[in-house]
Image (spheres, one colour):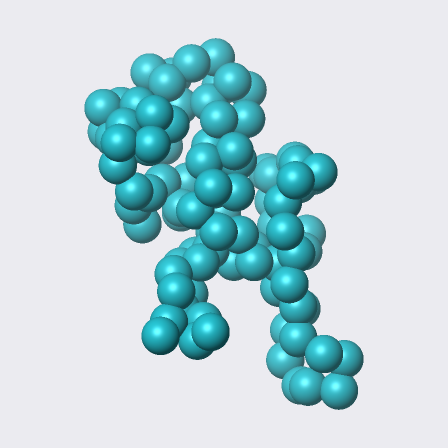
Length: 99
């Protein structure tokens, strides 16, 4: 069964360092490919909360990244799951990883 996660490549522009509680997973060194950091839904909510605070509130964040403010609020209150638009605003992309 695959689970949905969000990825960021090290050095992505505009993002602050990860919160301490973010879980990091990476491929073993012997496997070819780029190093990525994996964020689960809870991690994304934490990143969104920090980004909203930096922008000065949910309305300011939504206007800057042209996303729906009510969706931002729903994600922060954990009533809604994150969307592609929110992930993109945070510099993340969705990936599916088999367990």
